[in-house]
Length: 65
Image 1 (cartoon, rainbow, N blue to C red):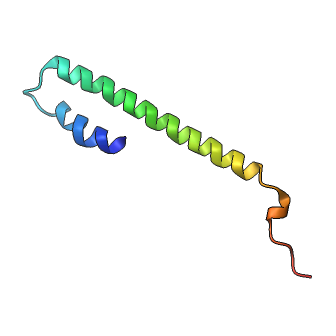
Image 2: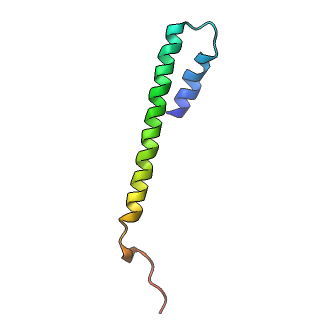
Image 3: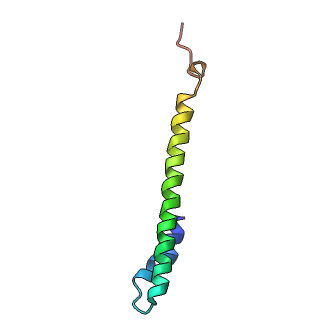
């Protein structure tokens, strides 16, 4: 998602020949894309934390006797 935003949307903001409407539409796309990325990262962190908390104690290696 970030690659799409950087390669396709970002150059439009710097082009003075682009109309105001196109810049606005790309700004909305940029905001939406960043929102998707933030939600995806938050979900990944949540799943990782839940996975670590839910691991059974028997999954740890037994101490040597």
